[in-house]
Amino acid sequence: MNQPQRSQKFAPHTAQRPGQPAPPKKVVTDATTETPMPLRPRVHQTVSIEELESMVTTPAPAAAVVSTKSQAERDASYLDLTLPSNFHFYPFKSLCARGLRGAEQAKIAAASNEGRLRHLVDAMSATLGDGISAYDLTQEDFHWLMFWQRKHSYGKVPYKHQTICTNQEHLDAVMKQEKDAKTLEIVQVIDKSMVSETIFDPSTVVIPDLGDVVVDTLRVKDMVTVNEMNMEEVTAEMTWLIDRASYLSHKHGDLKARMELVAKMTPDQIADLQVYMSQVTKYGLSESVTVRCKECGASVVSELTIDAQAFLPEVQ
Ligand SMILES: [Zn+2]
Image (cartoon, rainbow, N blue to C red):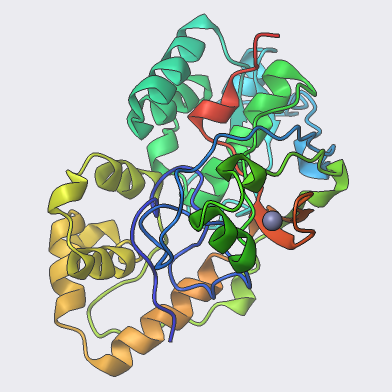
């Protein structure tokens, strides 16, 4: 059984999705590891994002008969996007966005400085057309949107990606002060072909029978709710409930109301829900890359992530 872990789960750069099997080797993150770890050094990797098929956007063609024009049809600065979910989770079946402007860059800078996801989501929302809110997007689509927006707004500017060696022997050597913590830093230019994309396939998902309870998928609005919780008050027990409650329909109420629904479920229902959670998240950008530690030679699986801190181009 998968044991979703605490901390950083709802950061925009979520490394491990609830209900999904853990990667073979995890990037060490502060609260999730049992191994005492040295202070995490900040490492920047240079990463180029490959030209993904879906990210090649063209202005929307004018419809032959137009009664209600979309924003992309009215305004050439908006481009039609093809989300990896294929719009499966939304009442709307198309989405357009424009590039970032100064107001959004200011929000992203604030998100980076304050660690508040809300500013980042507000920035992304401001770029979407037709009154669509980024809060309603799924985690996977939001992540994709951030990659698209960065590429669209800044071109092929490399972005920051940090990782450290997770080889136990290397960590032990640092703990014993035989090696400097700096040696754990891995700096490597990642091959641009390593980011791939999977389109959502509803036929691979089994909707669990939970009685009156309806399932959904993880939405950005829940990620923001969790991001704004006082982490010192969030117990491991609550995290377990939150991970599952995030996959229940918002028609059942806020996260707290949905946590109460999870609390009442039978073990069979929980098991079915967890299977569903792993199936319903199998799309979007695939970000795992293998990098090599120069110091000890170990291969480390690292996640290609993009968050507020990585978003804005570095001033050289
Ligand atoms: Zn190493």
